[in-house]
Length: 456
Image 1 (spheres, rainbow, N blue to C red):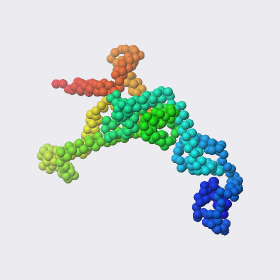
Image 2: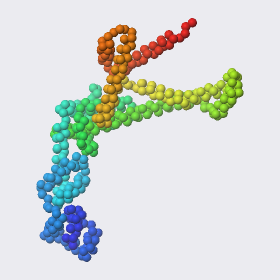
Image 3: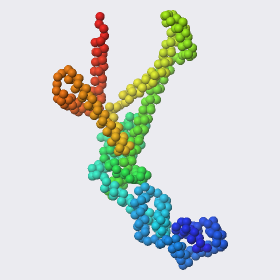
Image 4: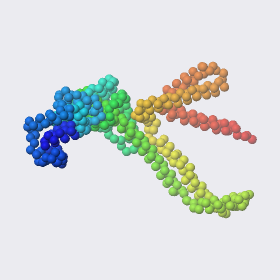
C-alpha cells in the first residue's frame, strides 16, 4: 500500500511526500480501492525504514530521475538568475518554479528547507549581479551628482528638519511627497522636483530590461529606508537603489504634472462658466414663444414690405421684446462660448509667475519614449527652419524692392540681425518683441485704412 501511494504521488508531483499524511485521505482511499487493499495499511507503513528507501529508489529509477547534488543546486541558482529573477521575486511563485525546474531536468528535488535556502541564495546572487551591472552602466558624472544630491539632502534633513532651503534645495521627504491641491504653486513644486531629478542625467537605458514591478520593489525599499541607512550601503547597492527610486519618481512626477495641468485647466473653465452664467442670470429675461414672435414679424414684413419698422414691426412685437431676444441670443449662442474663452484666456494671463514657467514640452514627451522625443524635436526644428527660410526670403525681397542691395550681403545682414535679437532669449522675445510687432502691424493697418478714405 505504501509503495502504491508513493508511486502515484511521484507520478503527479515529481517528488516524494515530505511527511506521511501530506497525501490527502481521499487519495489514499481511492488507491486502496484500486488495488483492493485496506486503506488502513498505509498508516502502518514505516516512513523511516529501509523499505521506503528501497521503494523510493525503485520509483525514481522507473521514472528516469536521479538524486540531487550540489552541482544541481548551483545550476538551478544560475538558471533562476538568468531566466526568472529579473521579472519575478515572489517567493511562493519561485518555489513552484524551482519544483518545475527540477522536474524538467529529472532530478528529485531536495527538502523544502533546502529549497528555501536555494531560492534565497539565488535572490542574493541576482541582486549582487544586478547592483554591480547597474553601477557599471552609470557614468561617473551621474554618480558624482547622486553623491552631491544625497549630501545636500542629508544636510537639509539634519539642519532644517527635512524642509526645503531658501536656495530652492529640496529635502528627501519633499522628493518623496505627492503633489498638493491643484494650483500654480503645486505645479512649480513638481517642476522643481522634476528638474532636480533630470539634473542627475541618469542613462535612458539604465533599466531597459528590468520589469516595472522589480523597480517598484527597489523604489519602495528606498522610500522606507532612512537616508543614513542608504548612505551606509556599499556603492553598488546604494547607487542602484537611488537610481531606481529617482527613475520611477521622474515618471510619477511627470504623470502628476499632466494631471495637475488638466485639473487647473478644468477649474479655470468651470470658473469662467460660472462667472458668465452669473452675469447672464443678472441680465437675462427669457423670452417665450419665439416661433410665434418670428411668425408675426415675418407676416407683418411681407404684408407691408415698404413700411417703416416702427410702424410695421413694433405694433406686432414691441421694442423691449426684441431687445430681450438679442440679449438672450448673445448669452446662449456663439457669443456665450466666446465670452467663456475670453475669461479663460484672461485667467491664464493673470496667473502669477506665468512668464517664468519652465515646463518644456520636449521634457514631458521624453517620458513617452526616445522615439517620440526625437520625432517631436525634429518637428520643432523643421518648423523653425522653414519659418526662418520663409521670413528671410520675404524680408530680403521687400528690402530689394526699395533699395538696390546685393542679395548675398542682404541675407547675411538679416541672419546677423536675427542672431543678435535672439540673444535676448525666447521668453523675452515672446513677452516684448512679439506684442511690439503686433501693435506696429495694427498701426500700419489703421494708417492704410486712413490713407484709402475718401477726402472732401
